Image (cartoon, rainbow, N blue to C red; front, side, top):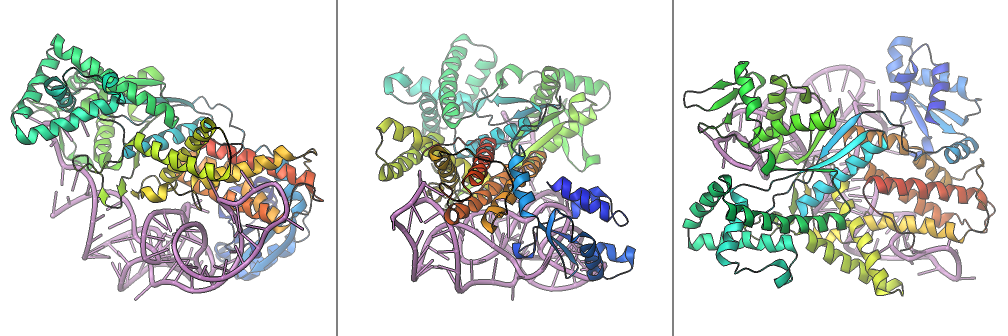
Length: 558
RNA sequence: GCGCCAGUAGCUCAGCUGGAUAGAGCAACGGAUUUCUAAUCCGUAGGUCUGGGGUUCGAGUCCCCGCUGGCGUACCA
């Protein structure tokens, strides 16, 4: 629709601007009384040597009888356009707004979540996963070939700490024997380690010693490591499944941590990196405003970033990506600047598509989450408690088998949590107030689900066939139609900028328009029933797609 | 110290690449339900957009200087 209107404008205004410029200038007036679309004419004033008011008036005179517009007005230098309601309704309802774009052949890798295997997932991981999953779906929808990956940080001294605590105090218990979810079971020993460390500082050295044994491939240590990692992974898998995310390929730090040294040494050979007097290999990044970065320690072992250098090569080789996205918190902004620089310096093919999707930290009303102070919000606990609250809300309204209540409760709870985590602009830090996140009113995930269920309910009860034809839409219908028409553009912008928040905010506005329409305009048995059914059908379809792209499942009945 | 990011209503947040009178939700107050799900809708009230300069027809948005807060700045991962 916008294209068509744009073409008309371009035709009449070819002397001042081309179609593309006009498309960019076209905006939505602050008040819908002013019009549906608006073109500010200020920038033409210099070229035409006339006042913006006069220019707008001239254009208005030329356009006023065009069939696409019901009315054209010049107000204070703005050219305001009122779209013909008949045209608006017919066009929006006959357009397939929510169809995926055809394949582009572009390959995109999205890495997200990437937990340590010594403790269960927490709220920060949930924000990460919500963003990662949504971005992957958005890019997929835009026709990209997507590979979702995760790097499990499954080795290192922190892993040895939970292993050591288990070895010393575990008494051979298992998650099964204690009836504890297996990743939580592992995490408990990590916490126990910290507690025991306070009484016994020697434990720190013992953990280091265990790491050395692990690196020396001591069979007993490796066996313990495998057992505990398996517990961690099993627990994670369960959470991933419940939350509704999955990875196409997993990478493990233990497989790659020592690789990449060859790439660095190759860089030394080329003179990109230098060997310092003490034997450490360093990269001098001062030319790019960064510091000196140690890559290989003086004992020859590599630091963490070398593994990321290697992994970038590995991903490029495996997936031939055009773009490689890392969903990682903004505390690692510097790390990714360095990574990108290192890859560029070495002239690697994989350097070009590197894109760090930096997201803000999740804070609690009490401040930052601190695992030591026990203020971390556990992912499983949050999902479980929110599910119970949602289930209670459902019980108040419906009489259903408990199983169905629980099923719906989980869907509602996840909608609440995911929406809360996605609606704030990705790059910004956000405050997560647990008591607000589980609200089911107003600007929330459940509001979106409820709107969807309302639409579904109307369609279920309809007995006549929807009819796609134009009519003189009233203000409520027109508002909904206009919101619907924006969907492809919003998705494109969200995907391009990796900004699910834009789509989340759009979904809410769309639902506000729908709920208003719902309130004001009866559908069933109304004089416009077939047309309104078509409108509700389009709404349900677009909202369903929007929610899918946010990683939120819907309920046909709530 | 240096670097990056943020500061909008009592609270949580929108405000797209500068455009008209700065918007939602929550909380407060007042309304709407014999009718498609009231987890809804409508209304009232609430603002020196952190402070100060600048750029221009026009600045919450761009530039500069402060203030406040967060995060980095490891031979940690």
